[in-house]
Length: 306
Image (tube, rainbow, N blue to C red):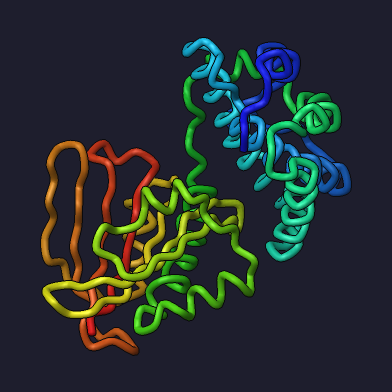
């Protein structure tokens, strides 16, 4: 998307210092199920709206303003996700229904955006006020310490992420074209060209990548073909903005692996595992790459070696 003009940004975004916010640390008030469902639907449209607005920040902004607004949009999306999970439980919305609501709302924002930041005034007109009304004070929320983790929610996210990664990438490494077919069937969003160039392995002979929203989390999935010690390989990789430990422990509990060692340079930690008794490949590996400080961002890749 081409960033929209500075004037439109200031009109549409500087109100972030005045619009509402409440951190996930502060509980939402008691709500009737129907009210909770309505709020969930509003959030479903606001999260893609905030994402588009973040992508359309103009390059002409002062660096401090740019960083502040970018962090604001990221926090809005993060808080919104936590509240959506709470609202879904309160309203009794099934996972399938959640995905349907989110998909419809995202498609509407995408259709209005039309792939360009020139249409953001229309988005601002439609979404700014009702999205601001979801919060009491974003400025105050941004100054608050990070919200305390909800153990039940963290476990739920870790379970969901582990199941998604295993079903998406572990099973089909005998033939990654199955991942590509599934991506087309499920209408996953293709990664932009720049992202593909950044993620594509240097020696790969084939590469595809997608952005996937699943069960309230966003994943970057890619598949590639290459060589390992002269042997052809099929690789499926997933990147997610969550802590690695709880998810990797669940993956290891679901598939048979043998640790082959860990390498750390202070900035990054890389772990290598041999896949034991994979249902369709004789030789395979799992690779995990995480930040040295174990921040909420990691990549796990499965490799089938022919």
